[in-house]
Image (cartoon, rainbow, N blue to C red; front, side, top):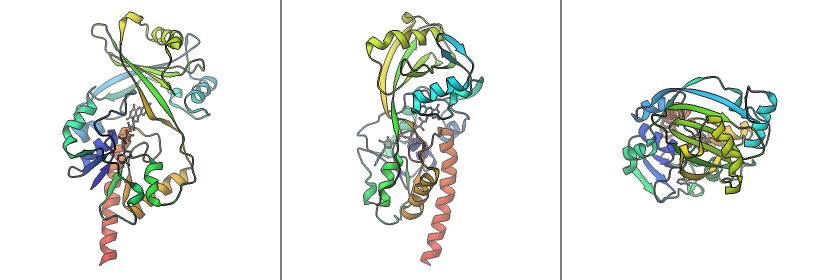
Length: 306
Ligand SMILES: Cc1cc2nc3c(=O)[nH]c(=O)nc-3n(C[C@H](O)[C@H](O)[C@H](O)COP(=O)(O)OP(=O)(O)OC[C@H]3O[C@@H](n4cnc5c(N)ncnc54)[C@H](O)[C@@H]3O)c2cc1C
């Protein structure tokens, strides 16, 4: 069993297949996900044996200096900002919710548990896999990369936008809240900011904001959370190449996933591999489905060869 990719989906999968080898293009560990990370359930915690914390999350929408309720106009402004088009986005739901939070060193702990099985700096060549491979592969590599295994171009545009993430520590004694504010305004590129405990995370569509743009988004964010500039300490700024993905034709999407497993023995897992906006809770469910498919496929294979 080979798992392709040591991002979060690959590392979760490595727990489900404890004897699998993991191949990863990066030469050394690199945390791809620095944006907000919350879970709907504790399924990932169970799958990895890493304890999560159940918290209450409060949400709001800040527009023109005021907190507003969701509306068609604000939802469309927000959607245009993050996707460039009109799609239903999470801004419609600002109900208080219960979520699960992983420890801040979640990625490092996953690595500690499965790290010895990872072959760093190994770029899996999908174009070379040829006909059906006897060793099953679970791929978390982006769909347009894995689709090379099919040997023919896919007639779809896989459009994605990069995002930039800035993080600060809130230097206030015992700060411990879970909050998200959406910013639909088109006048700057920060679309969402969140507090997880005492960690403040702002997400920007596209590139990092330049210093002279600071005034606008920074003052909106501080105002939203009732914070002063001297109370936050900047930790880091990172860019995620695969940030927001735009949907592709559903029939094409399903057909690529199905053909990769049926014709090449490559089972797609995760947000970019299956090209759908899933959360990591869904990855745990998909692992169960893949295990069932693998068992059925190997049974079919045995029947055929006998
Ligand atoms: C802004 C944002 C917010 C999100 N919020 C949440 C949230 O709150 N909760 C949640 O559960 N999820 C959330 N998600 C989703 C979650 O972040 C992603 O599902 C997850 O990080 C993607 O991990 P992955 O392992 O599927 O992909 P990746 O992190 O992209 O990992 C794939 C790996 O495969 C490697 N690779 C690619 N090609 C090859 C090759 N040919 N050979 C070998 N290796 C290869 C890459 O180098 C990479 O390391 C969010 C996503 C975004 C963008």
